[in-house]
Length: 522
Ligand code: KIV
Ligand code: ZN
Image (cartoon, rainbow, N blue to C red; front, side, top):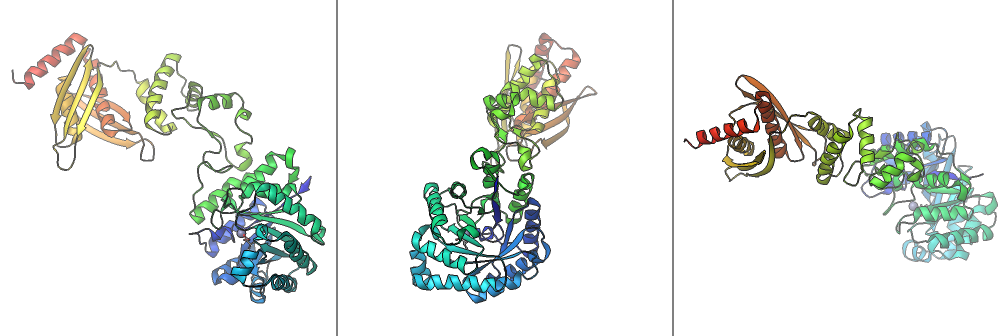
């Protein structure tokens, strides 16, 4: 199988991501991880750009063994000398020099004639070769250049000593078919190209950076320049993880090999994201939070029967411990039962059905139901206190300029017990209204509220302790609405009290009538 060389430019082009700036220690940390990932080349920086870039390139060149360490330089003696100075201690230095070859760049940016650009390219490569045996020449904006002129410049660069030539799609303008053709054309026309590494460097302005890079490999390019998480100027560069995993997963198509230890991909991605402060979008291929997550019931069912139904690579192959079955409103019973089994709960079919209905209600309110949510639900579901009272309706009004008021309706057998009350706060109002509706005289001894899971849509778990006639009763309630959770906890405790007293429906009704009379002062 032929080899493709991975040239990582996270620390150079990636650092050109708007808003990103890494210090020397942070760049070193990323470089160490890139070495663990086993990239072939680390482009450490653009030394002439700033003292910080110089220092970081120098530190990486001094410490990192294994990969080739590259430094960028425009086609001027000063840039090249700075790059060479920063790379002095690198065991395998690479000077990467570039000049633009497109009419737009030559006319408006460089204000130079094509012949001048050709001469500058040759001189730059020759100068760089005076410092290092390995020199890459890039024709910036190659894809918008005249093809014949581009071939001329690249031939001259090779003749001047370039060991690698790069064909950047600087503004992400190319299409895969066009780029494939361009590489094929250059392989035919550039003199000495067979002795040079042929590199591609694609930007993602039209979202085609990875597709373009892969098309170029099909046409015979053998080095890809890319970044972790696809960081880079504007819309970014081709993402390393996508290219590497496309080559690994579709070896049948590409028949190409890289040196990358793919199990280090996830770790590298996390490190780069945390040090740059650029989050990875959840649906990002390979390393996004959802890349190995399944939510739809049909998918979960298929996945549980055979993982290959919905996964074309394993999460372990990119360094993730496992796939995720996301329990949400699209999930089915199969995944629900499986997750409960993993959590150690084996329920009867009847209990499972009950718990599943509660889960679906919760999933309707909450985007994702976590393990802690499930445990909280089960705690409620598995404590089987006969429900004398059920909370049927709850309405609360509260604010900084209103008297907190609550209306509740409890169902007791066939009876609907509806009451309203005011309180010092919304909870006080709810508990007073429940007291009235239930007709039971109890004391609230303690109240605690805990967020069962993180996030704004977390489940709240309320635990209350009530006392009546010298006995205490604990009740729990869970909901995304903490007032509802509080009401449920209180009603749960009341049900324990009622159960403890062995009241039947008639006695309860009698107690309620007595309470009502007492309230109304009859
Ligand atoms: O996008 C580009 O053209 C570059 C060159 C410096 C290689 O980053
Ligand atoms: Zn670039």
